[in-house]
Structure formats: structure tokens, C-alpha cells
Length: 390
Image (cartoon, helix red, strand yellow):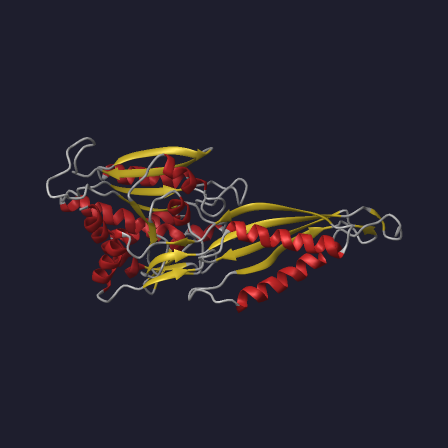
């Protein structure tokens, strides 16, 4: 077993199930401390801090050789050293059995919870930094490796990061099949509450059906999604809306006093959370117009705007060049529908592209990552760091 495969196996074996999704789950602390020891042993400066109780982010810094703050700018207008962060999330979604955390290797792939999403990318980032240290070369700018908590729920780790660290750019090491992702979608989750009046099923004078009063909202969601499908959209996907969950009533012979509908609106570049909220308010207004008894409210549970990096960003050029060299073919630059923690860094003013190994089956029992692609990813990340940080 190669050192890289052994590193990933050790990371997969650590159960980092997000306790916000499964109460009582262990969370990310054990893996954060594992990475802190590993990167500290490599000579990096390491910080751990709790973003949520008992759930720490870990950030390790390979200090560059560049000028100290206040040093004069060199003659000739040279740019100052640039810093780069390689980052990914530590948490995983719940698995059906403990065997999911027992990694197995078959036909050049590693199977296990978190193998693709996204411990393989973090293993590549650690390997890239260790290779830089072993080479004895000193970058001009700082290079960071960060492991973040809570991406699978509300991304508390990524949200907290910019207040403490502001690198000039970042690479999120999610699995992308070794493509460079410069644009990705966003999303909004809504709860729509419809209130009725509880009464016996034969008390037609008093009872108000809180479930059926949602019908115009449900029909509006269907019609809005058809409209979104007909609009021009990105190569990687389209904006969409769908009902996700519904709960209401508790027995057959009673008018339901309350019903809650969960809704997801998926966003692409050019769309926004504000637009989605306006669409939902219009659906509730239509329900009120259809029946004056409708008493509905809208709650935005969580929302993330889409991301679109400027192709002229120096990070994009450095990462594309490094990927091209590592792959032996021109790098593919593309968008992706799924939202990632990179969105929060971009919102904070930190350009962040996404680049990682080849994997599949995230959140399923068949999750896997291609082991050769992790090695290629590590080589590309090392090359990109040398280029970007100088």
C-alpha cells in the first residue's frame, strides 16, 4: 500500500459523521487532531479552534520566504508574494453501518464513507504540502491546508474561516474528476407553513383543512419548474424547484391544524437567493388569492448564492496550467451544479476554484475514489502552489 493510500485509509477509518445530521454522532474533532499532528510533524504551524462546541476547524501554515509586512516593494514593480489555501471539509453524512468506515481497495479504487466526499482531496492536499517540504524548496508566499467542519449542513466552518484567515486565493479539493471547476450552482431551502383550524371531521362549520390550502403553492411549484426548464441555462445544469418534504395532520377523522412543506430551489449563475424568495412569496400570494382562509408563512432555512469566477483570475491560470502538466492533456474548465464551501469563500472576497480527484457515489454505500487520480491531484496541487505562491 502506498503512503498516499495509507493516509486516505487512515482518514476514512475516522468516523466524522456530522452531529447536526445525526444527533450523537462523533463529529470532526478526531480527524482535525489527526491532521494537526500530521501537518505539525511536517513542520507547519497549526491552529485548531472550535467553530461549534467540540467541532474544530484545523488550519496549517507553511510559512513562505517572502517579505515581512512593511518591507519596501522591490524595484521593477514585482508583485508581493501571494498566499494560497488548499481546503476541504472534514464531515460526512451518516452511514447505514459501521462497516462504511472500513476502507477497502478494489481494482484501483478505495471504497468507504468519505473516500470521495471528501477525504481523498484532503489527502492529496496533505501529500502536496509534504512533497514541498521534502523538496527543501521555499515558496515566496504562504501555503495553507485547512480542514473545515459542517459542510454537510450549514457550512459553519467555511463561514467562520475568513474572519481568521484571508489567503489571496483558495482551492477547494472536492472531487471534480480532475477538472477545474470555476462556476457552481447555489440553492435555497424553504419551509412553507399553512395553518388550518383543528376540528372533528364532520364539523364542517369550524374545520379548516391546512393541508389542502397548500394546493395552489404545490401547483405553482410545478408550473415554475416547467418555466425554469424552458429558459436558457448553463451547460452543467438548470435552475429548478421541487417539493422536498411535507408533514401535517395526525389522524383521519380530524381537520389538520397545520401543514409544513419543505421546498428546494436550485440556482445557477445569474440567479440569486433574493430572486428565489420573491418567487416563493408570489406563490403564497397566489394561494391567498385562491382562498382567503389560507394562512401561510415562508421561512428561509438556509441559502447559498451561485459562484462564478472570472476566467482572468490568476488562480484559474495557475491551476489550469498545473492540471494540464499533471494530466498530460489540456485541463478541462467547467461548471458544476452542486454547491460547495467555495461559495462562502468567494462571497468573502477570496477567489476559490474547485479541483479534486475522480470519485463517485457520494452519500451512498458504494462511494469510491480512484487512487491514481489522487496522486495526479496531489502533483497538480503542488505545481499550482509553486506557480501561484512563487
